Length: 425
Ligand SMILES: [Zn+2]
Image 1 (cartoon, helix red, strand yellow):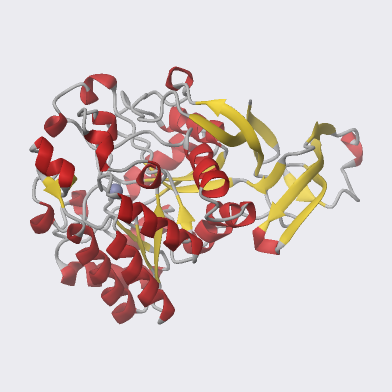
Image 2 (cartoon, rainbow, N blue to C red; image 1 turned 135 degrees about the horizontal axis):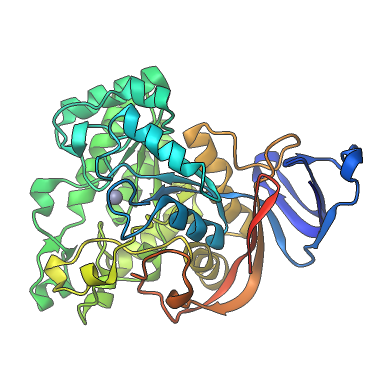
């Protein structure tokens, strides 16, 4: 099957390419068009005038809820949500049931992923059952096909265990991703510790609870000389710590989710459980520092932390509601709108880089570029398209979003995986 994407602005940061041109796809791969297969030489043409032609976007932090929680999301529905958001590759988190801490579960996920419309790559647990007590079989997990290890949703408190995990991960060649949360400091906190937690009488989740673990991870990444990636960075101090450590060459990095820059903790004042996530929405100064970190390259990866929950689970008192919001279908629109259009934090090529070559490099996967011969995973983006978020139309099985009804500028209009259109607006 051939395809010709005509007259788009091709942005391929891995190859430092940014120019208007045509892109050829032959037999599921990117080609230069000189040797389109003769059997089927009349290619499907797509007019990409005024569109961005980007490498298929990667989201390295999503919860697909299978096995175990298929009433929230399945691997197939989560993949459809990813396609609708412009993502061709997603990495699913191990807080499933059973937890993704054994080769058998990883194999089960990879089999289920064969039916998904985008590339679904599993991550494996760091500790057995995500209990933080005993290491999971990291070598066997890697052999079973994980691209990273993480206890996301939970955080290993024992620094010696974490050190050993990082050393094993270095030996087998996978990065360590970490959800940064000190349980003693955070306690039963549900919202940012500050004005609103005090006023509303809700238990506070202080910045320090994140920053302490970011610091721990910097020290261990340095000590073990291996890459540790801090997930969903929310606190100003975390950005400062990462900046200083990265300048010294420590193998440490961080990612930011759209909700942590789109909203602050004042969004919780009417107890909307769709504003309850972990880590929590922070204060204005945190948002400002996250934006600075994105602008100066301290933060090099963007992701959703897509965390679907059924409506009945979120329709309870704030304290009792589960953490998390869906994100795959609003993520690109929010980041384009906020980072590129409104705040002018970064320009388009940088945004594409943060969604493609940067996560691909961290995970060491063959994705995130339009190099000749690579799988034709491509996202077409209309950066100026104005649209309104309508949660009732989500491909995801869940609707738990605080962004329903938001007017955004910019979204993906077509998602191509292996040369096949899997979603189009
Ligand atoms: Zn997390």
